[in-house]
Length: 117
Image 1: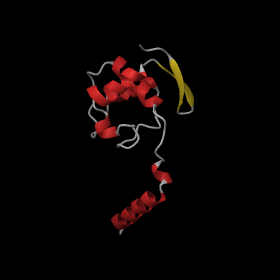
Image 2: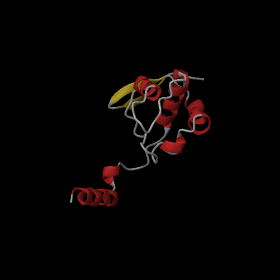
Image 3: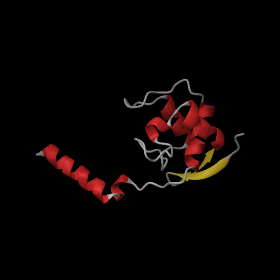
Image 4: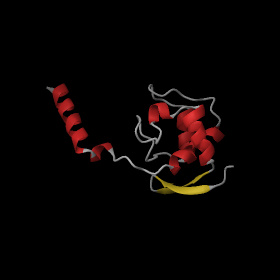
């Protein structure tokens, strides 16, 4: 279990200490992260892929979330979060960025225009 692997996050090489197989079980079964973030961490809100945190930053954020739409998971052990982080990093990025979907951008632009009129 565990092991040290490396990946690129935020343009930097980042070491991960978690076990991605265990992380998948935690993400989908134990903590049910998929309920908000999607099974592939790319279809929920907010998307977790591409990952914008280092492992340490991810653990700190999840344990102390300042966002009203995401409770702080203060009791989740750092080792579980490291495993979830490793799993998220292992998921290939499939979904395009929202800005790369012209129809969605058009809808958002029209909605914003309607709100400002």
